[in-house]
Image (cartoon, rainbow, N blue to C red; front, side, top):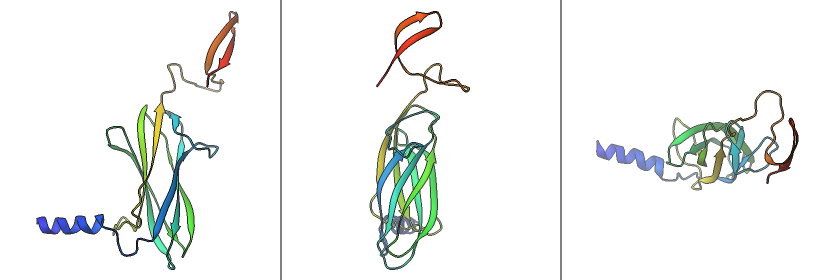
Length: 165
């Protein structure tokens, strides 16, 4: 029983002979496609990576993204399957909406499939993400939400605000 389990673990953990896909440029971006490291709870961000097939043959793949909390627990898991043409590259994206404040780490992997998993790259891309709360009041409805420091009270319902950095 122990020998069979060891063989299964080794077949998944060791790179296969066709480890020809490279993954690079893991980034967490906002709706404007700008890189971010700090996001608010409830905001949707995109986790993206560049894949490159370095082989002369087409390659089926599964791009797996996981987000881990500060304790190392996986709190989000998503994947995209596809086919890369010979010497072809592609940028893959998955969306994530954090629900709680905290420090998180996004990791991206490329495997052959879920049915017969074999790593297609040795590299594991990672990016750290800090999630902050929306604040006590938050923004609701169609009203604009301002952040900053009140610099002066003009009258009972008008204030001056300096934008915070």
